Structures are given as structure tokens and as C-alpha cells.
Length: 114
Image (cartoon, rainbow, N blue to C red):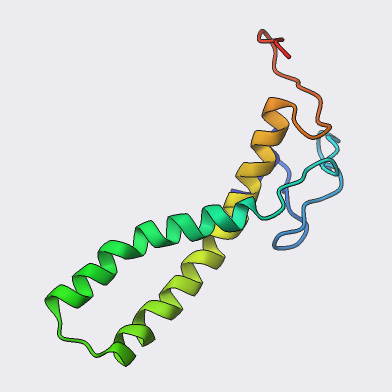
């Protein structure tokens, strides 16, 4: 996971959310990427959809007070959001590269439509 979408071998990120300037293996330039806030939106959306059934089950099955419910849900939500953030950013960068957006050169063979 978190591998270069072009070669699939080198690591895409040098730090948690900071991609390499260029792939160490295939030398594709990652500086044109502009993921901005979209990975955070994806992470929040997925976390909400994953936690909704958990919250419903906790409220319906057990008589938990608001404090205990918050003590369970908030750390779980934080872990899920942070855990989904890097894969979401990698996916956004890969989609930008795949479609030739934001300064990336479209490299797919066979389909050369602009």
C-alpha cells in the first residue's frame, strides 16, 4: 500500500502525508499533484459511513449514556479518519496521474484521448 501508481514498487510517501518529489524507482515527478483537502473529505465520508451502523447498534442494543458513547465513538472516529487519510491521498494522487490532470502527462497506452 502507498506505492507508486506508475511502477507499483517504490513508496509514494516519504512521510505520512508528504509524497516524494519524484519516484525513486521510475522517476515520475509527483510535484504537480494537488490533492488539497479532497483526501480529508473522503476520509470523513468513509468514517461516517463506517461508524453509522456502529453508533446505531450501540444506541439500540445497550443503554449507554452520552458520555460513555462519546468515549467509545470519538477515539474510534479519530483512528478511522487518520487511518484512511493516507490511502485517500494516495488514491487522489493516483487518479490525477492516471487521468493526466494538474500537469501530469497522460501515459496510458492504447487510450490516447485527451
